[in-house]
Length: 198
Image (cartoon, rainbow, N blue to C red; front, top):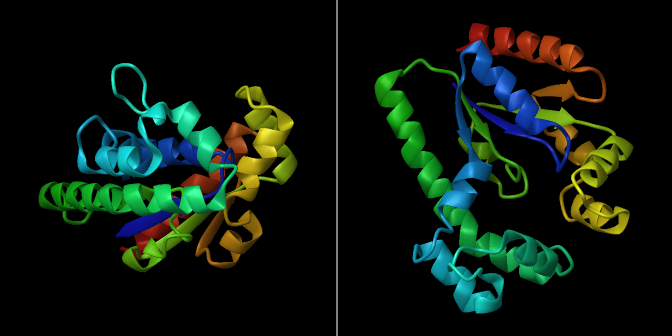
């Protein structure tokens, strides 16, 4: 069974993904894949340099993620272009990882931790969608705790599909505004339900 795990920035998706892994799911983290496919001289890296120039690179030619984020989160057209360059490479690598997992354990519950699952239309490639929900004030607080100023935090939240819209498309919703233990209990319940479905 393939499970698409999504949410919004600072909703707690990574925490939920970690709990799924502890429970026995195989995890494919698309944030990690997105960092891997933009390593120097790979196809996605070349596309970024072609469209955004070398000013988004560090001295060692790695992508300056902070500079890139500042550029795209203030310009929807640039964000769309970045996604057009990076997403195909990320999803190709995700497909390769899924094939590796299936060779080893054909019956595994595979959780694809995918921030833009619904925005990209890739929900068609999963069996069930799990959305991690957090109230916007909690998202804001978490982003500010990570060092963003309130304006930048709000821009990043607004750059994504509203969580309320994602919830409408979910098979399961995990409410992540409470304690870690409350979140863990919800993930355990969802994992048990997924185990019965496979």
